Length: 248
Ligand SMILES: [Zn+2]
Image (cartoon, rainbow, N blue to C red; front, side):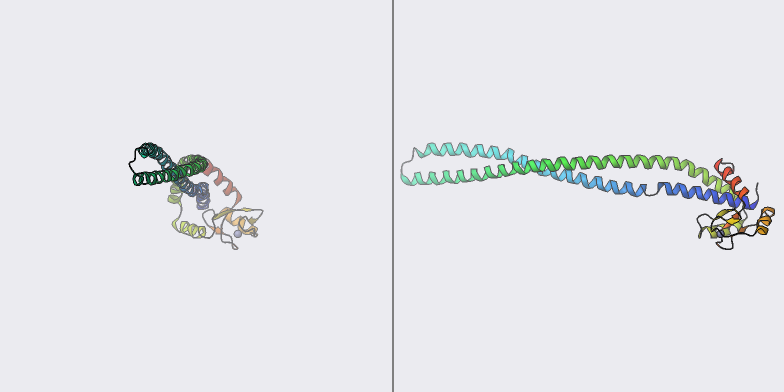
């Protein structure tokens, strides 16, 4: 079981599993980050609209008080107009009354305009609130997905990393270095021979060599065409099963 070629095949199978685990997380962390930004942007939009609405409500609140005050003043001035002693006084009061009426009308216009824009703002607020809720929901789903995957893959990762250490301890250092070198060119460094061909590049392997491989299980044979490490099919199947069962 500790023949070098078996160890090499095991190492390759374990590395494939580790690669797959890494791929599974894939874009998820990046997607979560992008959604977090989107949620933050949408929240700012909601808050900005709310602030504008507050401002209008405040204007309306103080505006009504001011209008009441102006109205009281107008009534008082109108009374005074009947008690004047001369034309000069009458003109002065008339002028003041006109001034107050003008101001009141300006304020009335402002409040009316504010009410119209408040309606528009309310519609904007409803829309951005819905967008915010939607983005927040999507973020929560993605975070849950990521957490689940990370949790599951952590258990798997630990299992395969421990297996890898056990294999490397038994594997010849020179072969290990050679394996790592090949891995930099081929993600799948070890391939089985199928129908007398390298299953990595499909070039034919002489049957003489295949016979030789079966009898020299401590030697490493590589494909002359693509450079991948070759294993006979029985070794490949035996390795797949052993790694699958964690029996390494
Ligand atoms: Zn090949």
